[in-house]
Image 1 (cartoon, rainbow, N blue to C red):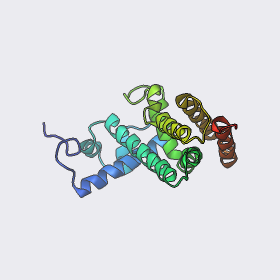
Image 2: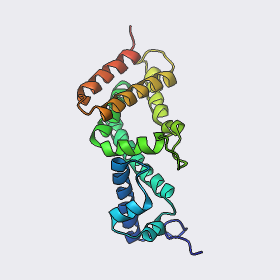
Image 3: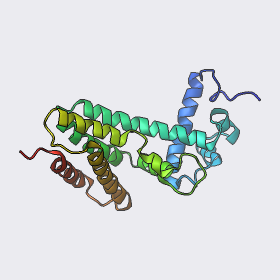
Image 4: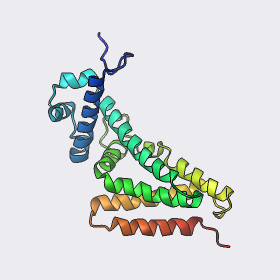
Amino acid sequence: MTPRRGDGPAAPTFTEQARRRQLVECTIDLISTRGYPGTSLSAIAERAGLSKAAVLYHFASKDNLTRAALEQVMAEFGAYVTERLASAEGPRDAVVAYVRAMIGYQQANRRHVRVITEILLDDHGGTTLKNPSSHDTNGRWQALAALLAEGQEAGVLREFTPQTVALAIGGAIDAVIAHWLVHPDLDLDAATAELVTFTLNAIDRRD
């Protein structure tokens, strides 16, 4: 069988790269509006103005395409957070920047949040990506724990277990975002300020 251009060893052409990007964007749009179960290869093909066979030329399956969509979303999310951490002055400010960036990106990219929750946390089955435990495999708590440990080493944060506190802060962020998704009238800016206060109360030295 002739290998698909997008799955074989040959580098895709510029036109093929553009087509793959289009298909990924169509997948993101559909998952964010219809959910994962309602996003079929046929629906993606229709949104892109292509045949299903043309979609399969670039991606071997729905799971293959879904994985590419998730990877793009997580890459953009990670780049956003990393950029804001880079401008922080010191580890304490970096933790604050992390909290603000995690919420800020999701506030500005609601459809991406839906893609993440649909693919990683949805329980309808049908894809190897749908594993609730995989929600934390993208280095989220590890990255925050590293920032907290750096602050402790610099002597600006109190002594605590970085992993536990990182999980607590991450859980608080997730809870606020989950509530906002269901109740969009939530003042997310005010909630962010409260989460920053919550975080600083948890990590600041008390002497």
